[in-house]
Length: 94
Image (cartoon, rainbow, N blue to C red):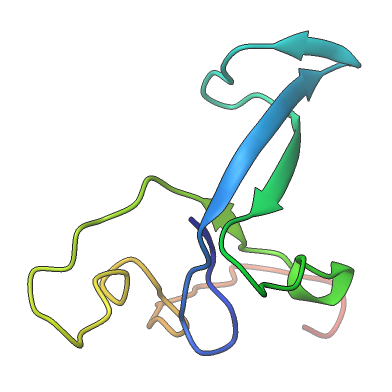
């Protein structure tokens, strides 16, 4: 599943190949930088456009919906969060 999009939805995809440093590999390890070739699944589905790939996009395993009509990925999508930030000293305007 590829996503989230602006609405928090994920699209089903197939990973066709994975490359690390221009070498084909079977799986990616933690904290590795890889290139992934994906293909969308289903009839009459349009491919993923460059504008749909943005910071925070991810590939995850599919989750079976426990409640029909609900988005099981909603718990994985975080759009806003609260933080307490303390800046001790900075010489420019933040």
